[in-house]
Amino acid sequence: MFSIFSFNKAKGKTQSTLSFDPEIQKPVLRCSICTGEQVAGFKNLNTGKFEEVMLIRNEKDLTEFMSRCGISEISREY
Image (tube, rainbow, N blue to C red; front, side, top):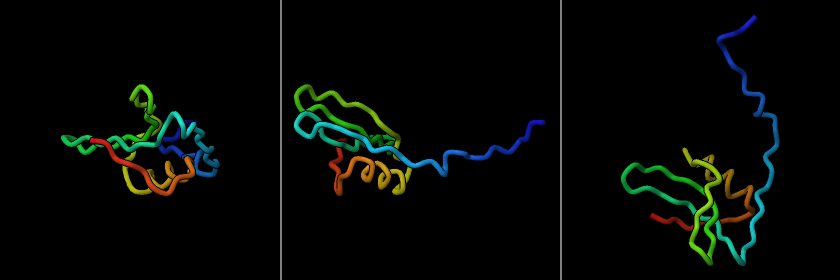
């Protein structure tokens, strides 16, 4: 039997840590001036290439990303 309600089984799941090389990459929050969309990821310091990790919809998402990276502050790019 199928239910129209879905249950989030991932709530009990622990989040894994994100590893990055601080000599080559830095965590960045990329923000759109037009839409207000925010995406967290890593910017390669040598090439400038941005690697998206997660969409930031609220302060909880940002806190989760920062704790998974082990950082206390993050720079924003527009």
